[in-house]
Length: 143
Image (tube, rainbow, N blue to C red; front, top):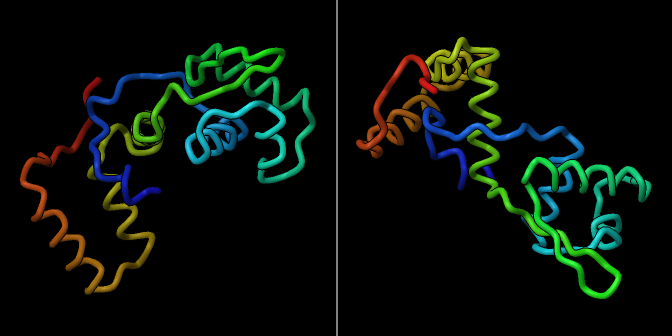
């Protein structure tokens, strides 16, 4: 999934309520499978989850505006209102602000240093950067 959403800058990402790890698990299922009712989500959840905990996540996601729901008979069906790209950009923006002083350049440099990239990896990154003339380098973020 990252290859399709990591190609965007975070500087102009709209602020949205952050996702907790549990909420993110629910959102991933909804992004992958589309509209679902709680019982279907519970059956696909990556680890056992009790119904009240799942419903708490769904209620919170609904309140935050990340999901919508519709009633069919007695059941509610939930679907994502937030796109994966938007959630990624928002969470990345928060990460960059919190850990990199708002600097995308600092983030990238720390990734390069901590991952001990090979010369081939660095050349590939340079090639990818050269392919994206519309992306402007910047040392900080603006909100």
